[in-house]
Image 1 (cartoon, rainbow, N blue to C red):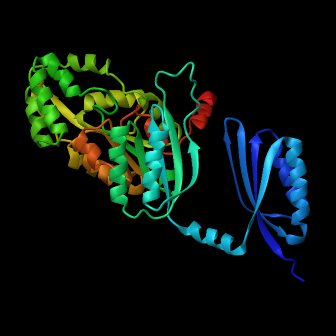
Image 2 (cartoon, rainbow, N blue to C red; image 1 turned 180 degrees about the horizontal axis):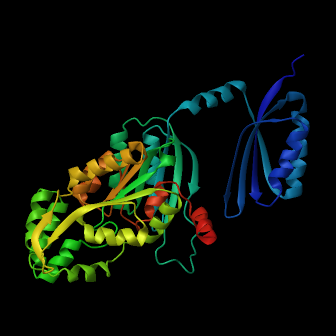
Image 3 (cartoon, helix red, strand yellow; image 1 turned 120 degrees about the horizontal axis):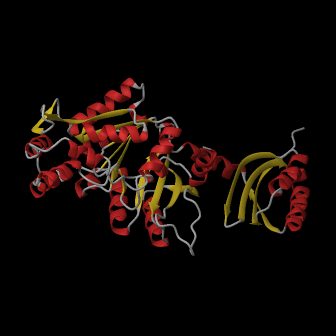
Length: 412
């Protein structure tokens, strides 16, 4: 004779302590309860534990009685809710829906920012399954200089209009001082293998060609052309040729002095350390110059560097010309695909990070394109953007947690 079964949702809240879960499971195990679902969160040492069980109806009363005694002994609150077969099956049927990850990132996060983000999700018919904090706990008495705050929402459903939602999130981010990333929660997100960076104003906080121009006494002329090119107002190749011509006669030794004093972007060292530790292939794809890309390559152990090479004459002076094909936006996208093929990496497993209009083609081509402290046109056309913190913000878009990263750093 088949014994009638029932489902019960057990909710436990209170001060967390070692052995709490083991004590509850000891009771459930003695009555051969099946665990249909389980989840736990710990906020400021306060536990919230949910367990959905299925068991013989004849034993459920005794199990709840013993759990109540155990809860009293442990000093926690416990509650029970029946779940019908129909309710359970309806819940199971929803598990096949699409899953996404929404990441919120900033120096600090406020209720207003989170409210705005969750309203967008609700309007798109998406349900939040879980929320987790990726950054470490912040001190309010001794705040860090480069403070970071990041939370990640796991959501389920199909957006009614994903493009409109993406645009709304990016617009909100610009006006509310927070960064958003909305990605499909699939195996590619968890298995990124190649990351390609722009160099100038991304890995370093300057445009090297502007630094060279200042030494050559043509700084204002070159800077004006650079800004127009980065905004996409003029063709990159045309602007590049014009700027390089203005550097004619500059001594090669100036490049060494600039390279040794490059202003490294906040978070770049931490990001590179982690990427190398986790076996990612790293490339610099730059409209700048190979001399400086190779300098950074030595610093971080970068795998590939593609940039533009300045022509130098026998006296060690720049000729005002360059050697080979210009690395412009089109070429960057081509190189990303080429490196992915060489490394046998699916394009969906690639990441591109850049700030200028000439980075848009590779940002669009990559599985994850991130505009970093980018020009307005780039932000408007990118799906992910980081404007509030340093370059290590990329790690949070990949799902890394501070606690795990710090543990790895201590072991190393």
